[in-house]
Image: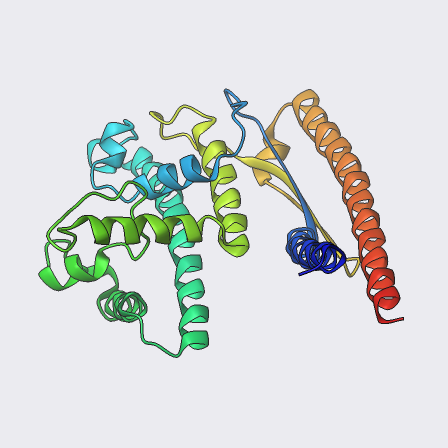
Length: 281
């Protein structure tokens, strides 16, 4: 391959990667969502895909709530039990949503390869079992135990009865690496990580749940939806007005940044279109 052709191929490859990145960004910014909460503490940690995956995956561990000292509803009064159950439900929903996203990815891959995947069947059978048994699920039921095993690959895979050689371990590591390079999965993982950070922002040993006092969502088609928690209007006037002021300022700043990002992406798309047109000439 001559030098000009090599440079041309590299430029083409770079352009394809740029187009793919732009496509991912467009998926990310189809809507602007601003939430305002009041929490005890805020972590300054930046998003790390591997660490976030480990943290969300660990929620499925049977002793997760005990280790984290998250209140056990069975040890509380009736008035506190409902809140404790809701708190645990919020944590487990983070894992469930991430696993559901993985299920959709497996479905998409299965459609492309036309090869059946046992994890898809397991997940579907689990959903069927949950619908049929509803509130009467017996955790010790051998059938349920088998179906309840996560279809997500373990972030720190170790050899077990099914993985008794290094080849299988390497394969599982590769699955995780590919998963963390999947744009759709990473978007969901980032969202779940943000929600978990919000849950952790309060005192997790308490049954009190941090409240999203105000939420505003803007869609590309111009729809704007604002929601306010009823507890916001039970606060003293000064606190309520301050929260609303902070939220409105956040919406204005977010909208400005959002539109700036859109303009930037439109500029990139136009440049790509011009490059493609010039290439054909």
